[in-house]
Image 1: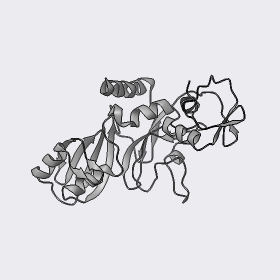
Image 2: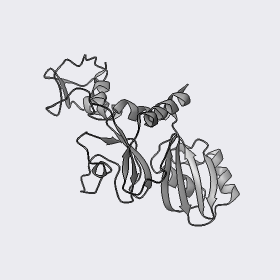
Image 3: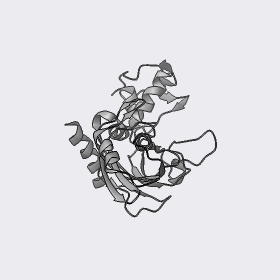
Image 4: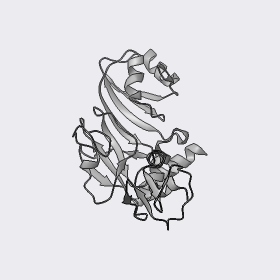
Length: 235
């Protein structure tokens, strides 16, 4: 197994973050620094990150959390702000699957399964995310049509979105990209300021009645549905 994948399975970090740890020279194998994330390991070696021994793979868990506003989507924060990990008390080392802006609320997943996190967030798998956005005024049909066709942003044109009006000043958008502040920027590109933004679905999983700041552990069936959604998009 590749070293980065082994670290992800051991719950150290997501696979992408594990690759970065290795590339930064923070991982040792049998006492020697390794900087190649693709280095093959058997799991029988003595592997450490920043000098701390890596335990074997632990049981994988996935939690759904309704992120409140003001909470950051990281494992820790240098400014002392509350993080999504703080809201899910467990002895297991969790990290968020992707990110939501501090001002954005709604569904975010936390897991210790680096492989699953990679699958759900990598653009090639095109796992859809659905958002409800309340904007400053009623969007015109022209604006909605532009969002459906894709809009030009400073980092390139967006893929077509699924868009429907759900209220006088509220729209629902489904996208499968994950650019920074993408939904807000898309709406700004068609002339609308976002008043509030909430993610209501991640792939087949919906936020439902989960209250703000509350969390629940996903069932094995729900986790399998997430995996299946990624496979279907990739196939």
